[in-house]
Length: 434
Image (cartoon, rainbow, N blue to C red):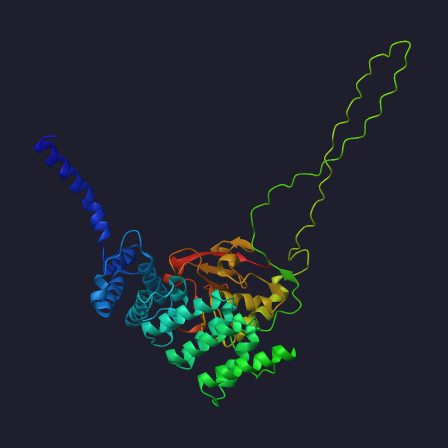
């Protein structure tokens, strides 16, 4: 190849590499700015204020390169920003929470847990290293088969009681050992936290006492005596469920029908010596008939059970109102702390109607409803994290419409669906009860 040809080839390769390099070298601030511009719910002036707050709070970290093939950490920051705007938080608080999440991610905390726990920053200012410790601790416990709501209660206590990281880690390690010993973790956490909050023992002594007591109870095969403690896992099971609304799934694969066995063939006649036997005629084989497949019993519906929103609504509304002001707790399911889907599930469950626990499964349940047809009791769904269904609320007034939801900063509160940012994040609605 001539020198001229090699030079031309080098220029072509360089030109092809420039766009990829430019894409690869986009920094965090540029990534945030580009994504905010795509958001139709944010006025330009508000976008500028958020970007300026992020630039100030992140300082040199805002210049961190975001690789095109690995945007996971940057996406968590974006979701903190989106959630803050959804909660109508001030720009400086949005920047603080986003930076704390970034710090936690930089320390190796799992992104899927940081997304939920970092939202506590909208209630009080929490350092990034603390969020990292909580997120990693939560993951360690759930990996050890500790129920998620029990692990969430440890984080909630640490947040509300201002426990230092050492105290949190002591209890985490103690609960990890209790899970390995196969103790009932709800009972164990009730004993551990209930007695510790009495203020009579230090964390290490309390942990040792709980372990020794549960070992003694296990050896004697007796139930432990528990203090009157209310955690986010202390919800009583729903009583007397009348109707269970399940997510609608694709039709199952058809089952092959059972085959009816062929009828036995007659034995051929014994041949005689004289005259020669005539050739045997073939016996016709009866066609095989498939066995009739029994039809499954139809799933009960609210109509078949005589359930109507007119009769359910008074209790449903009373239940929803009882949670107003309940603080947001990731994974929470009680009046001590609750998340968005826990709020909607409890409101219905307390009125004998069970719906799924997770917002994405609630989205698949019931019948789709258009905006203009919304009425009280309908579930409304939002995309607050930029990745599909991530938030749910309960319509309490068709005028507006107004709905209750678990806000990260305000807890369970009332909001108007007609506000611009709710409308731009709105995905649709589902009706559980006609």
